[in-house]
Amino acid sequence: MREHYAEITGIGGEVVAVGTGNRQYAAAFVEDEHVPFPVLVDDDSDAARAAGVEKVNFFKLILNRRSWAGNRRAREAGHRIHRAGSRVTQLGATFVLGPGDQIRYEHLDEHSADHAPLDDVIGALHT
Image (cartoon, rainbow, N blue to C red; front, side, top):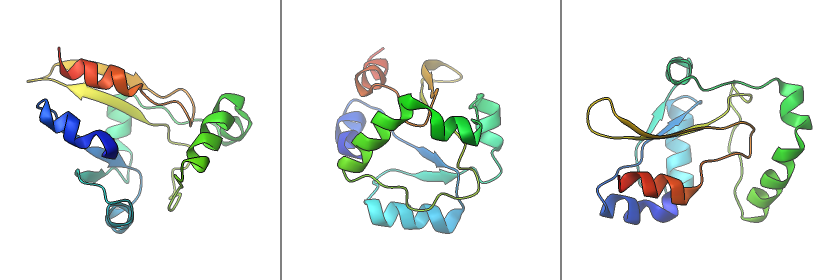
């Protein structure tokens, strides 16, 4: 999202990340990765539970072949996990929220390398 932040804000959107670590971890992540958008902390997983974001069994996480290719691509692109934290099995999700309680787009990750297609996310901003 960092690479597309100007495009997203240029069409009236905003990016907010919600992480599984604590405040110190989030601050280090923002600094290390030059993240231009707010990063919130969901240390107790209250937001993840409320949004229906799943956890995955640790062995399924490691053995899921769909994750391997995505993890390899991420490593090759220079992405890394800074600090795993206590919830390494927490999957991610992407939401595009509209005015009020409108959910324009929702993607709940099915495995660790599953992420919302950026074209879909940006497309939802235009609706």
